[in-house]
Image (cartoon, rainbow, N blue to C red; front, side, top):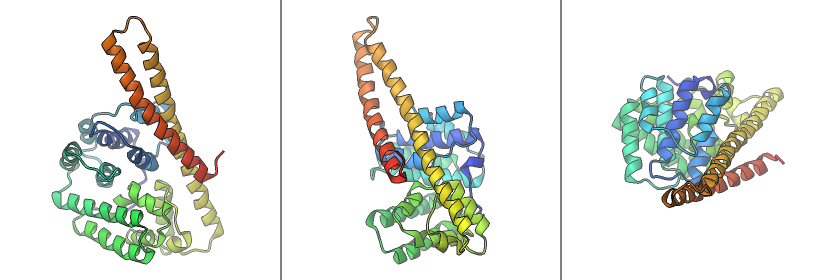
Length: 302
């Protein structure tokens, strides 16, 4: 089944678990990197969630939830959601081009809890590796189309819905890199094209991907193109808004720790622990602010 998955239509409970799992695995090596943050916030969809739910997701940048608890919550979730999470978990641990033993252990836990076979996990890893190779090396767009379709066919062969990869941060990154024909080829495998423009629109709107509208939808409808362009811009602003919400919480936490550190009642050991926490959170704040500034510049925001 290759119908599109729109995270905006997923329940708040499941979205908390989905994003919580991504943050948890990013922290599996006891730190979170700029690349991992960019990837997670790039696919984040908080529309329709309560203010409390949104703040909770944004707070995961400070302290993530238990990976096991998040996976357990999604153990019997919709197949598309489970596979999409598995794809993004693999994508996240490779975001900084490093994989340590804790991250590998976390991937194995996810495989078990999400009911993914070893064969399927191998195919998912191969797909993500190919996507990253195409994106990072800037391979010829025609080659990219063939390579992506071949990799996607390997997913289908082992029962992984191809639509699940549309929520991958690396796939979204292909659009930013201008590799559109490869995405068009992948889109054709899940029903995006002139024959079924509605599904194409649903996936584009659901994930924030926007690329080669003429190629993907094979339509000269200017109003449709304008609609998709407007949605692309809206999604870009939402990413900035979500990142800014996380930044605000980082600032609040740093201020609280600074106040505790200067309190006379705090012992020397606690004060030192607070100073170390402030140092870590300040570094996290720095690269979050850099990411927001970069995205604002790209979107033309002041």
